[in-house]
Length: 171
Image 1 (spheres, rainbow, N blue to C red):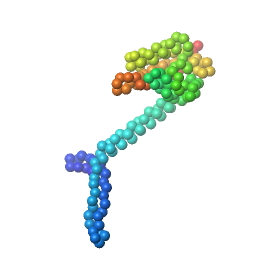
Image 2 (cartoon, rainbow, N blue to C red):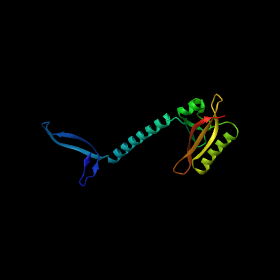
Image 3 (cartoon, rainbow, N blue to C red):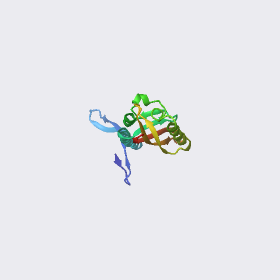
Image 4 (cartoon, one colour):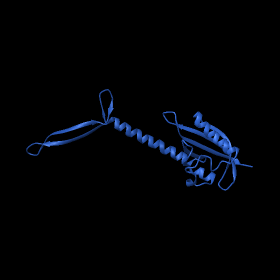
């Protein structure tokens, strides 16, 4: 790192060799310097992004609420441990299935869940609702459901994030 006049900081990479005279004594150095400031900035930015991503992963992984991420077709690509614990379904049983199909109670609740997903796809806005859900063992519970889109630069939904908070046993 060097500080130029005016306080501007730059990062330089140097390479050089010592050139000897006829007696083998150092006579001069020949080399070059390359400004690597931009590369250094990008490296630092990537380290920061990796740190932020690790925090995000720990938060999602450790959350007590059921969290799934689905692709643009609504097929599950990620489930956190709480989703597995709450629904009773294993990781491999949930991956690739449509969001909610394994645990939504068939009938009006499943239809409402599907309607929420369709509304998110159409409006690109988060939807919130209450649905009856069913664990793998058949036990029903009420769940507050949040479905939100992740939209790319072209305005297309590329993922859905679905978070459920089990609020009570169904009666």
